[in-house]
Image (cartoon, rainbow over all chains, first blue to last red):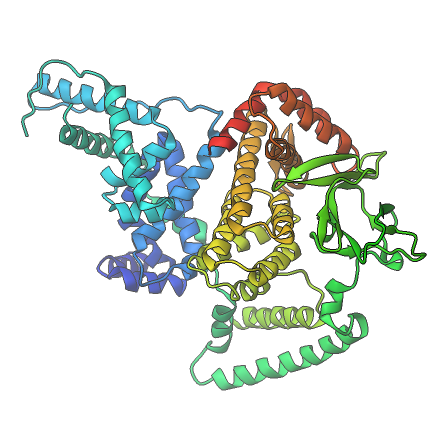
Length: 195
Length: 197
Length: 231
């Protein structure tokens, strides 16, 4: 194994605080491990917010660069993920502002099969409608929903990431779900799913 | 759709979206590291000083001494230059009216502020040109007409007079008026002609 | 760290000390930080981070901001209310907006003895106007480009772009604060047109005004004014 790979494998088993300290000391390979651990979560957040895989990829990359540059401002006693998500959320918001009048082409999502074709289709249909509904939600309602149902953040954490009061978070999520239901409309008669 | 079903579908939909497009994330670590190069996270002043003072074991005191001596030399030279150039009291820099004739830049207009205020004990003008700090008007001959000429660069200014502590925002000589925090302010436009700024 | 880098750092540190000793340098992050310490803040990190972001803006009014913080610290009022005001400025800076007009309003409010919550309400409304006006200009194909960026048609130097945004938003803010109706698009347009025309060739470059005015419509301004009312 080459030295780079050896380094990388060392970082793979380190705890987060050690990785962050190493990153602060300038060891970019340690930061690489942080990226590996968090990239899906950050990408999912960005994709949920921005509804464009290309933009989500850009912002994910930028978020990790910015986080690294500002690492000295991160308080090691607080939750790293919240801090990182806040950076990503802010970058997403800026990108949306800039992009507001330059609509993106809706991405094509792959569909997967399933054991039971009929159930799979119904499930597919529901998910497509939910995704479509999500895209049509205003950003202020979409963002807390993504953080709750993709990133699994608590209301308190969401309020930190988006810098809005916790009460507002709850209200928005409640309303967002109601709006989604309206947007989705009736999803067909047959509902095989029981659980 | 039931509430819990919506939530489940939402979770699934979001997860599948990410799965479907996550190929983009392959190699992200390498791209980020490559873009960072060999730069360290931006350090504050203390971070730089720590770095400066701790390059190798055993050499810290020598480094500190060199740093201290260099600093002293620069500080002495700096203070000498500063004393030659700067006003003696930093407070003077700000309180010293920006409106002395000697310091007026060439393209500033000397704008007349005039207010008849018989029996007033003090009149000043406050405005966007002074961060709303009072600039006193004078009534040298005691005829109740208070004036000041202020050199102002071209632009738009909002202002009001303060007469014995009371604000008065409707200067008859103003170019216009605005209402600000429920009270009137006057507006003047200064300068004109040619491509500005 | 090799010897050359160390030497370079020492030289740079020396130069910085020299500059600091000579004095008269514009307010910097440490000045702002020191001034902020006079106000008990819960979100000090965020506020300071936003100021440091602002310091990187072309033409950032650092000295005015420093004076405002000092004046705010000395003004009567609860620390939480002072913080709210600073956070409004922070949000504007995080969005990359020019804060000159916001600072002016804050100075005026403090000088008039207006309650801090009222000042903050006004600043928030004006911040919304700045956001919406900037978005409008983007939508109309007018952008600001930082110094050194590749020239794009309709990309103005950032200072000039900010001057347009600031003045348009300020004109709308004055009109609304004076009791004007947000639904009277033609009146909104007249305010903006008059302001830009008066400053055309004075503090706004004539061609910039000529670029922007024909692209704005009364309906755009009504939309913006309503957003500020409800936002």
